[in-house]
Picture 1 (spheres, rainbow, N blue to C red):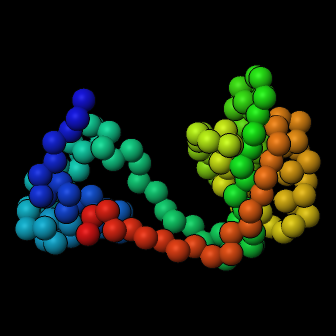
Picture 2: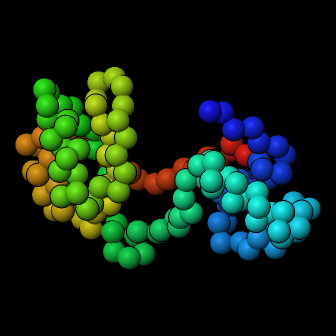
Length: 146
C-alpha cells in the first residue's frame, strides 16, 4: 500500500533524517505545527512503517575501527542460504544487501586492521568467493529531501 505524504510529512522526514534527536516541540517550531500535531504525525509515520527506526551515525574510526571494507560475494548452489543462516557469526559485517549482477551480495564491514580483514576473508571463503574493496573515504550525497 502506497502512503500519501503531504508537505509537513516530508519536512518532518527531512528534519529527522538530519537529526533524529530533536524534540517534537522543536520539530513543530521548524515546520509551523504544534508539538501535539507533530507528535501525531511522527507516530503515524512510524505506525505506517514509513519511519522504520531511529538510529545514530557512528564514527567507527574514533572507537578504533579504522578499516571500512566492502565485500562482494559470489555463491553457488545453496551457499547463499547457508551464509544468511550463519550471518550472526560475522559481527564485523554491519550491513548486507542482496544484489543482481555478477555478485549475489554486498557486505559492508567495519574492521580494526588488515589482519582482521584477512581473517574475515578466510572465514568467508567457505561460503563463496569474496572480492574486497577498502573504502578510502565517504562521500555522502543526501539530496532526497532537498
